[in-house]
Length: 291
Image (cartoon, rainbow, N blue to C red):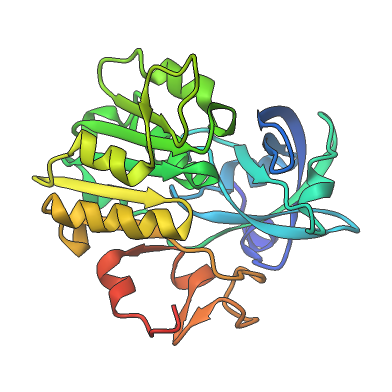
């Protein structure tokens, strides 16, 4: 346990911590490639003190290259280990460099930032996770937390509804197919356009939500993905009887500093990096029309 100056260094929001890349997994190939980076802090004090809440983010960077605000896609039950699933932006400065990393390379991590999902308030409730594309990354941190043997008994039924444009665009596909074999979780995968060897649902994610028709009774729905997907997912959840207070999502709004100082992510008096990125739909409804 760190004390004194060591604790101050860990809590310093401006100080990046060095971490070693343990593993790199290619999730999605092509121009919009997604890779998952498993990293471990070099400092043992940081390993024990860096504890994120599901849904929080961090600044992932390279010395001399810069850093990018990325969702932590691993659960906090993995002590000292973090995973970041990074979409490569061709015109970006940092993500193309991150995609050049090899196992053993060193990255910087700053955080954790944001409010996270209030998982302690959801004990005893059924949870429905609805994701699209890379939007599955922050949701993964929550359902992997809930499905951990040490936490599983605290929650009810778990449904994961997830889709992408094609089967090759599905992030965490192998892992999700393994979760399909479990008795305590229902996985509903989909793709937008039919493929010869695809036997699951074909259609957009909001339509699959209608097909699955989760019950709003004693339930919480979490959704993350493209804004247009979220719009229609929320619309369909409301048709099924979910109240705005039962629907949670995460926002991405030009986050840069992570601590509410630069003002790039504000929506009125709300700073997404500090007050979010997790909001209920009830909170979003009260935000200025600029959002």
